[in-house]
Image (cartoon, rainbow, N blue to C red; front, side, top):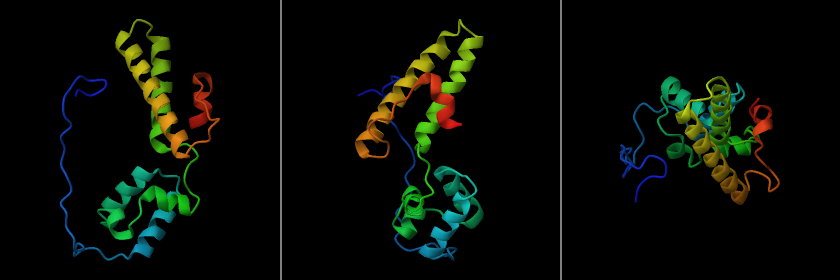
Length: 151
């Protein structure tokens, strides 16, 4: 079966090696890792930015392996998560930028198609997050108020 928007077949990628024992350079316990996540989150970083900083600065390759929790779960426990999930807010930002671009370049057909695709991705994600309970049932995405949502 082909992918939804690109007509390409598979999705190949590398897989992390399954190493059961901990890495020799790891000097942090699970409580210390959670404290680091909370400290970094207070600097208004997203979950993906927190993971990158933990990997690059502190040498923690995989948070879930050492704490048995994802970064977003840790942020939820400490009430530091954003009201709109990160992937949805990034798609909304992309939609805002595409709308501004199309206002200046009205004949850009490729950008118009990209805008349609981005808006359909937003609709599907909103439907998913409503079902999971991450967004309230009455939450709606309105194009005119998109800039206010992301801020």
